[in-house]
Length: 418
Image (cartoon, rainbow, N blue to C red; front, side, top):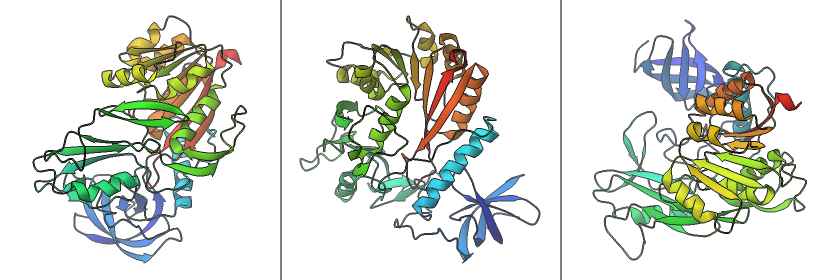
């Protein structure tokens, strides 16, 4: 087998990164971009390694029942989405299955307590944050799938409408730029474009130092380099049954996925108002400030100074919230009061080993682990189990529809308080 060769293949599985999987007669695994399990296809091989090959589907002889027509003209070439060609119900089913597999294979969790995934009310036009590359002619681009090559684009179906509306207006205003970031607040209507446009125009203000967004009634300032939840699209919907929250009397209303994620965290903490809670990797204080009215004291830890400045600004009016700037693994073990609960929301890299050691030393009654990567989540849950914590519940929520990314909220307790 060699690059450029075309082979017929029956696809039988789906990989964690989104491609379908089939095996040759020699039992070599082939990861096929653009395919779905159950399909008979022709794959053009692009890369051959010792134990596997990668390619892309160029012909479909027998399509899967869940195959749909992608609305995006760049799908398959752009690296942003992996599953536009799959019915959303099938995407949700596969995300649950992928979580179970990662927890079993990496975390060695037998029969992990994975709950039904919380779907997005609408799986399109949800992202509030776009990072565009700019080519030599000043055109907006994304990066092509599995390469660093630029792909000029004119529309994106997962970006929120205000960003989509700006895209044609930005074309031609970016000579000499390398990247441009556009962020928007769903509930505030505010726009941030950074850095300032190379061709200034009064019609499109740019260079804003921050924008604001609202989650569960709490307003947040978010500076240009600070992280914030991307799925803030607001939809009218019923609250999913997985969000038990007995203190919520209204179960129907306008909610974003970010609202639901925050409600999951609050629900799993089950606070009485007497607790000390640590919010590790706290960013601009997203969870910390929602926890504060329900706890005695909240301590947020964040390494990024820009996010800490935002968090301190956002916490104006709260007298029970403190923010510490530094690495979580360095500061978590220095908390003066033993916390009753800890929320951890790390990047895709997961928790550093020092974080798990600090949690083992602090022995909080409850840990709520918010993860955006099932592989590192599985690794860390195994580490926490080995340190005496019990995994009670694993709740996926679809924060990134049409992509392979998966958000999970896990609830753990200290085995010593059983």
